Length: 229
Ligand SMILES: [Zn+2]
Ligand SMILES: [Zn+2]
Image 1 (cartoon, rainbow, N blue to C red):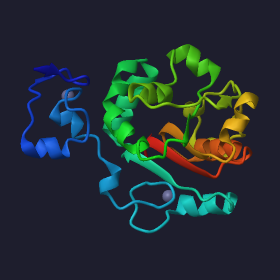
Image 2 (tube, rainbow, N blue to C red; image 1 turned 135 degrees about the horizontal axis):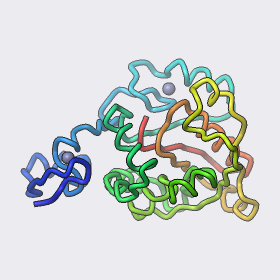
Image 3 (cartoon, rainbow, N blue to C red; image 1 turned 45 degrees about the vertical axis):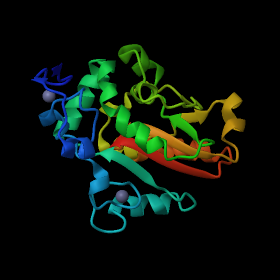
Image 4 (cartoon, helix red, strand yellow; image 1 turned 180 degrees about the horizontal axis):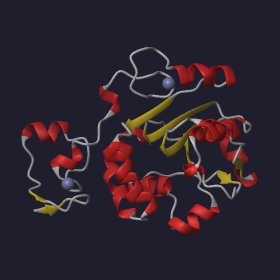
């Protein structure tokens, strides 16, 4: 018997044959009911740009981004749909500072990033110093660490007194570049495949800024991966 990390329900962790084949998350962390709230996006029709659930090739937002960044062959992959359950979960993880909850993503994050070749540089999106002081950790780094993924902190967040996640959608679209590549890390990105990782894809603004900063260092390709879309 285990206690679900989210709802506390006690459940048996013996698996049926079907569960062994299809369980999307580490069974022992969440009960079946909570686990089924995380919708795996790879099982849905997706936008080829941002990876959201979408029937057409590209969604309207991605068409706008393509016009703004014509030289960037943008390709984002996300693990789960950012539904009501996911929002509550991330709220507890990030804003209540419950770092343990990040373990729920380990299996899927590991599976996704292990497909990259071993020379790929994995770069988490940094959070502002202010957020770090409040939260005590960078949620993306914690998730990578818990999944056993080696990553490089190449980007630095240039502090802005306004908290990004509190801004409205329009203001976020217009926000100035908050990232730069740390001088000593520039060489590490040159001629390398780079994967930028974030927790939630909201407007795409954060990831486009990060990709723009990384692209100045001459990588061979840039991909982005998020837990939620
Ligand atoms: Zn549960
Ligand atoms: Zn899209």
